[in-house]
Length: 116
Image (cartoon, rainbow, N blue to C red; front, side):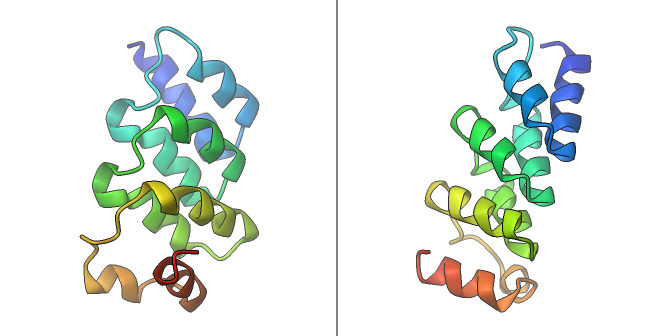
């Protein structure tokens, strides 16, 4: 794994640069699930649903107790809601603590508890 390319993937996911994310996912020296799926975490945190779509099949949404979903659910933008819809079927909220649920907007709690 090339750490500079790995960091470039994470930065592209953070910035929502889906073109660069798509290019780096296919690079032989990049592991999209590397560093505990940090690129997916960054994309979800920032509400970049196109990046989440690209990273989801090659990452692990269960990393950090499904933190990519938690980060997306904390956001209030349309992109965050789309990320929640993408991540929810692949995530596990059963180990979330009460404080994690209480920090979410009511619309996210309702969507997650109803199964979207």
